[in-house]
Image (cartoon, rainbow, N blue to C red; front, side):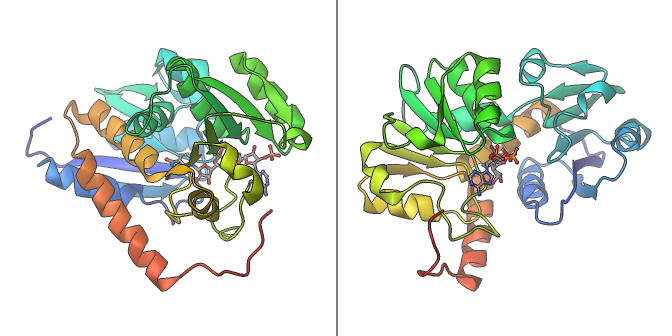
Length: 284
Ligand code: NAP
């Protein structure tokens, strides 16, 4: 996409004010030498917003909560993997044809593969929402063996059935064993910033603990996992890789991933300096 013409990109969500995608994508596009704007839209009418992509000649759009599933009927084409997942987080306006993709699962897989081999390992995935769906889908693609634990057993069961993997009721957490524990719930980010989704006394049985939350970078779960001797992976890598894969679809160019990580990490660290964690908060 090396061209001097100004390109417009966007992110659609509701709410959208706290998204770090504009910060990361603009820094990357600038580094890639692409004159661009990346605009956050708090969408109130999804169908009209999607029509606007064509009407305004927006080159690419990131899709975030709560529109990842509801956008599918409004697109012209959906990539096979996004269709299997039932969720789109990326729209590419390919000369007026709106094409949907999902890069969340790939972002998750690429961030894990920087640290460990997925093939053959057992993963205990906590949560059964959209992020769990991306994580479980990605793990299965890479030969991992995920199982699901969730507060609401019916949702765990539905996700497990969709992908043909086991699930366990929360009451059995003292019995589960896996090489990797993965938190995909929002427990650990604002407003539950000082809560943990998993009891500290059970963490030592997992060699690896992954939290897909990236704000804060070090959640209570990851702090307690380190104290228990586990190796840890935070959610920044997933965020960077899912965004980098979006830029790759839109521009055909390889984005500067380490630089993108640095930009977001520096921003998050400055936020944490302003809002340090409190010791007295409780584990859920
Ligand atoms: P979601 O669809 O709303 O699902 C949330 C899941 O967490 C549900 O299964 C819910 O359980 C569970 N949960 C919520 N509050 C809980 C609590 N207090 N105790 C126990 N379980 C609880 O949300 P999502 O889209 O999956 O997003 C989840 C997190 O992933 C967010 O923090 C988001 O920022 C993060 N995320 C990170 C990235 C990244 O790039 N790193 C990408 C996507 C998402 P029930 O089924 O019982 O309601």
